[in-house]
Length: 212
Image (cartoon, rainbow, N blue to C red; front, side):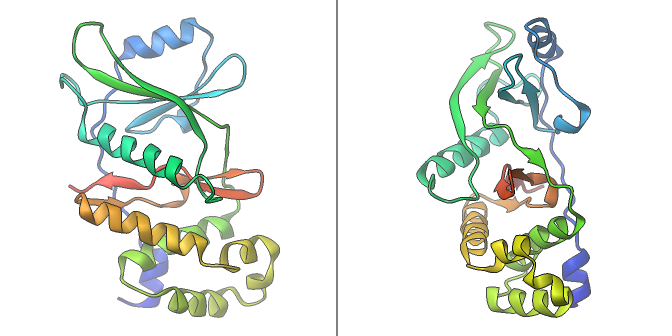
């Protein structure tokens, strides 16, 4: 694969999760709000009246018990808890499951998390996506660093770029997440929308997708 293709490649995401509209109506009645940009195919992010964040992780319609996507998300939360000192991890709290409608055995997960902001800088978006692409392509960090220096030129020395390339923490994290994905027949899904910001700190929010 040519270098240009490595930089331009995008992943095709196919997720079939479903959230009962009754859950949305209930949360809205309690004063929770959401935006179209915060509603994904597998989860919905809600803003509580006090400004905190609640995620509802969907199921497959009509399914009883936990879905594969929910089990994948559970693995992610446990990973973040065991790597709490990693600056790229999100901060989750107070997560549990519930049935909806009650007695249906249709399971959902809900979890509170810190409030983060989307990445809007096009350069930063392009950079973070390369880690997924290069790791899955079997490239090395040294090779990514070499290409980044060539392509970014003087921009490579900007502080927010150096915060990424100044050590191997993000590379090591993405490599670790890729190994977990391979063991579970998942794949990395670290396009720029699955990263967010805590101030100026990049945070991974949703690393995997079930392979089709």
